[in-house]
Length: 185
Picture 1 (cartoon, rainbow, N blue to C red):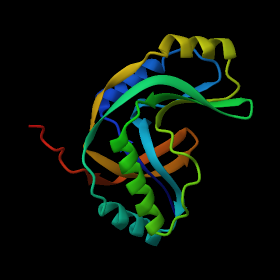
Picture 2 (picture 1 turned 180 degrees about the vertical axis):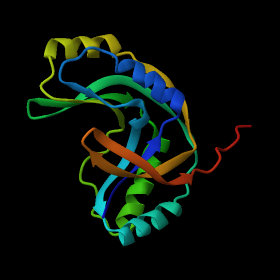
Picture 3 (picture 1 turned 135 degrees about the horizontal axis):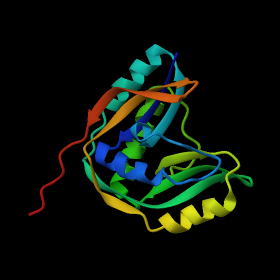
Picture 4 (picture 1 turned 120 degrees about the vertical axis):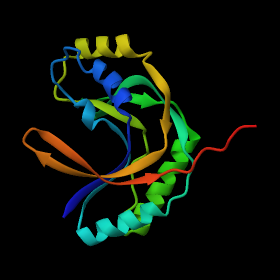
């Protein structure tokens, strides 16, 4: 069995810039190391190696153009009254939505259940466990106007994830090139 997800692997310069946000003293935050920062298009979960091969083959058929992405703002995910993740958001982007829909279709064609959650593009900065609400509020206020881009997106990646004692370890299993952008005249 292998645990998979499909994501945009961010350039090192972008991950380094996002890493600067993770230096804040925020009790209850487990910061994501910059090398693990990515934008998930589809979490797949545990599959056997045969289905992993089917997913790879389906993703390889995707035809979509490259595009630019802009990261903007910070926020949190909560369930009930519990805040559990801190993230950087993504400016609305029809090309990203189009790619995400194609990835979803490919993964379903490969035998996975359809994703039931609404796609909310973001880059996770930290997992939160009972954060200090005052310090969290100050972090959100101080970084609310964060903006980074344009970030060129020229491929997407199938990753495997292995959970360890010191966190998750991600391995790029396959990259899928996007088509060159149309040249403006």
